[in-house]
Image (cartoon, rainbow, N blue to C red; front, side, top):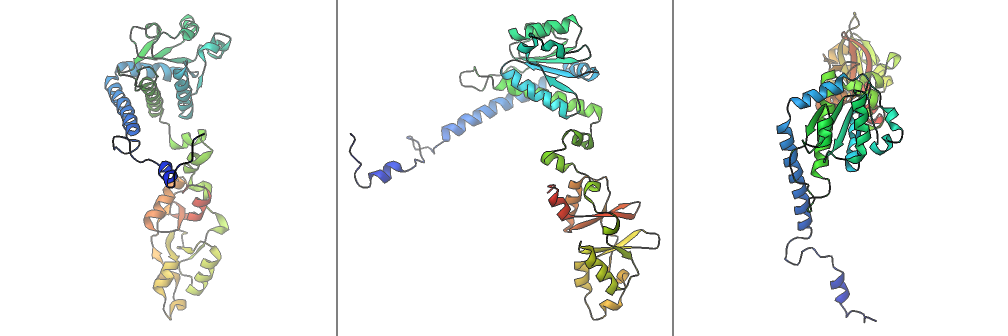
Amino acid sequence: MTPPPAAGAAGEAGDIKTETAAGAPAGAADLAAARAVLATEAAALAALAERLDGRFVTALDLIGSASGRVVVTGMGKSGHVARKIAATFASTGTPALFVHPAEASHGDLGMITASDAVLALSNSGETPELADLVDYTRRFAIPLVAITGRAESTLAREADVALLLAEAPEACPMGLAPTTSTTQMLALGDALAVALLARKGFTAADFRLFHPGGRLGRKLLRVRDLMHTGAEVPLAPAGTPMDRAIIAMTAGRFGCLGLVDGAGLLVGIITDGDLRRAMSPDLLSRTAAEVMTASPRTIGAEALAAEALREMNQRRITALFVTEAGRPVGIIHVHDLLRAGVA
């Protein structure tokens, strides 16, 4: 049985070491290894970008002209990357799905139609599980795009177009674990999806249709989705006496009052700040037009809610009137944006 440590020894032994045996800070080797991985993969991505050529455009043509979906497939780590690529395509306006190559040989080939295009991932280009799926595309003239690391591989030869990975070592110290190669595959998939997005003129509004939930969906809300309308909009004629203007402003709950002319156009705004600046014994005998800030900042109903928040932050204001052709149709307050999770 080990005897208990001498007095004071327990504290010394229990201290967390902050230096290595060589005197270097603890974790230095870990940080060096991590930075080496990132540097290796970054260099591979730079080389991949440099070697993109007309084959990439041909791949876009094949995928973009498919009237069906993009079927993305791969085995092992390539399969995990393929699932993400399929999800990226789908969320950016290109219908897509993942098909497991092994399951394809047991009935899932029926998920692939003649109107689809197939994107197959394999670093070696010799993945046995892909054989039946590749043969199926050749038999029914289904466009096949390959992402592979070997130009002379079976997959590259059979594909209508092969996108080749840059020659680069895996970031794993043994050079075995798929790291650099899968990073390149993922980046190429992103490049294909984003290039197709640009071709189609996919907009933020389109993007929101596929992302209605979560923070992203909230960021893409429109001003019209959050603004107050009708009787809630605090408005008064520009000639309104200040005593009545203050009452209307207080009832509006937004800390401001919009002022309109005879044609219904928004010509000014009175805020708490305007009241403080105009404070004088004769304030209540004046008209709203004499106190207002003319030509106030406004926003359109179709603007993104995030744009309204940016405008408020830049101008240091808490509310914006929403106008159409100069006429106020609503108001949006910073609290509306906070409640919606836009901020």
